[in-house]
Structure formats: C-alpha cells, structure tokens
Length: 328
Image 1 (spheres, rainbow, N blue to C red):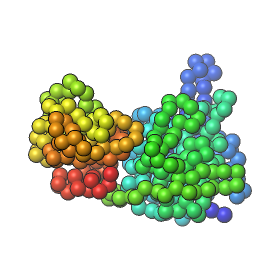
Image 2: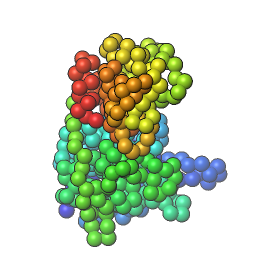
Image 3: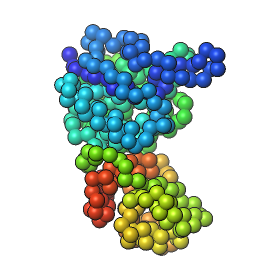
C-alpha cells in the first residue's frame, strides 16, 4: 500500500454556505473532507495536516513558499510515496508551479481543489480528493513533476490554467495535452511531462518583482515609476500577440535592463507564447534586442513567481536573466 500524505491549505474544499447569509465560509476541517471521501483501507492517508485555512486569492508569495517548504518536509518526515495538497482554486496553478520549480524530488505531489462547496448539489471536493490520492500513490506518477487534478484529468503544473471561474472542469492545459486521467480502471498516464529546470529553494521571496499589462497608451514613465516605487529587481511586462508592446516602451525596457532590472515579456494570449518575429516598433524581437527575456508560453503570474525565486537566489542580473531564459 502506498504511503500518501495530505497537506491542506484552505479553499472551497473546506467551505460551506452560511445558513443565514448564504455566503461561503471555511467551516469544515480537512478531516471532515477526508471522512466524506472515504479514504480508508487501500487509500488510507499516512498523515493529514491542516497547514492553513486561506482563501487562495489572499496567498502571498511568502505563503506559497511556505506550502512548498512544508510539502518537502512532510515528504521526508513521513517517508511518503506521494503527497496531496488541497488549495483554493483561484491561485492553485501558481503555488503548484512554484512547487514544481523549487521542489527537487521525484515523488508525486498532486494539487487539487473544489469548485463547488460542501452541501451544494454537485459538490466535487471529496471526489477530487479521492482522485488526487490515487494519483499521488501511483508508481507511474513518479518523476512527472508536480501535477494538478481537479476532475479526472492529470495536468502538468507548468501548463495548467484555471480557465473558468465556476465550472467543475475549470482547469485545462491550453494548447497542451493532459498527462493522463484517473479512469474507472486506475491511473492512466500517456503524456510526456514538460522539461523541468530547477531553481534553488530560496530562504524567502522578499525581493520584489512587479508585473504590468501593456496597452496602446501605456506611458514609459509608468514602467520606471513602478520599479522605483517598489524597488523591484524584476519586471514582468505582459504584451499582446507574440509578446508585442507599444513601440515607445522599448527604450524604457532597455533603460531598466541597463539599470540591472530583469525584464520578462509574456503574452495575454492563452496559447502560442512569445516569439521574436517583429523587430520593428515594439515587437518581441526589439524587446529581445533591448535585453528582455521572452517567457514563452508561461503566463504572467507564473513568470512573476519564477522570477521572484530566481532573483532571490541569483543576485547578478545577467546571471538571473540567463537562468530565467533556461527556466521558461
């Protein structure tokens, strides 16, 4: 029997509607969800820890790093074969990705959540927990990296996105296949996981990194003002299409890079990623020439966390930019 543990960090999976107001509140314990899921016998958990009771939209990078650190400790302290992390769905993809980048361990770590609270028709928390435990205990999941399963599909943490605000099948890997699924017969895995570039586990994520969307009338002064106001060592600039921004921003990007700020370029599109095609005006090729790093298909929120981890452990801007290039 596989030794699987559970780390709970809050979210809808422990929430129920208030009898008077109808608003959702975290009124359950994770033990309640474990009992509802019927996790005994073959799928009994070795350890269950309630690490936090947070709404995931409130999770800071420091709190996300705390989940990564505690996951690593539980895996070792209890000699686990795999670990399940329950998490609010809003920012689950970010914490899962951070864990994937920082956790140097082949054992499965499976993030899951609920889209509907306990007591509501179609509540999915207990079923998702059962599914996640099966994946975490599967020998075939070893070496896949951190994965996410909300529903039947198994997604790579690097690729997965929350695509819908309330539907049960809210999570998908845009432009990518799932890694597999939990079927009535067991855990079936068929996809190739993405390559992983490890970043050293930082002591903290206190080095600020700013993120800004670029619009047609974004003033260059805004980029400089945000960096100055926050003391940011990195900036994630979200462009359009293949990573293109207004032409007047390119000199500002070059200036920031010259000042030692690592600038990453993402795109607002869900699939396709950034590509250095246009070298005139504000094209991604012009940004690349200005010293920015194109983040590929990695979305803005994940890129920001990755850059925070990199600048926390790699002080030299040139080296940090090179590690970012390899990691995206």
